Length: 116
Image (cartoon, rainbow, N blue to C red; front, side, top):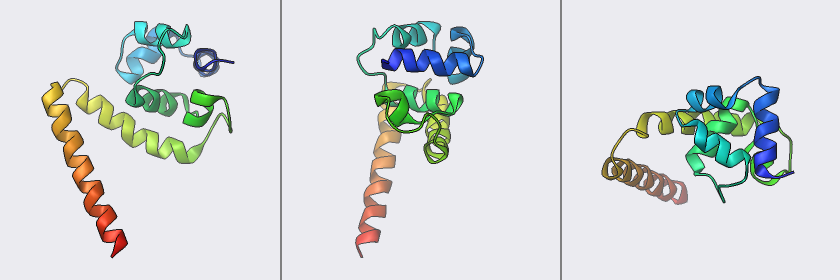
């Protein structure tokens, strides 16, 4: 089963149309269609997170077909990442890069504290 087939299976099992799922995660139906037809080599990470959160499936299962279809730990992370995506998708590239820099700087400082 391909990533596209797994997405379609999960989408249908949750009762979403392509339009409904696209609207829920803040993207276009074309993005969903392209993923389901395996026309996208590797979807953006934030799209994957939003899909997994909305469909309540694990990233490992969606991307690679391994592990359990549903994973509560990945869902917690996906909720946060999905919200970040929803908030930042309308920002300019420059603004998105700034936010990424802030997150990377925070992570670096957090990692430094853990080492002490």
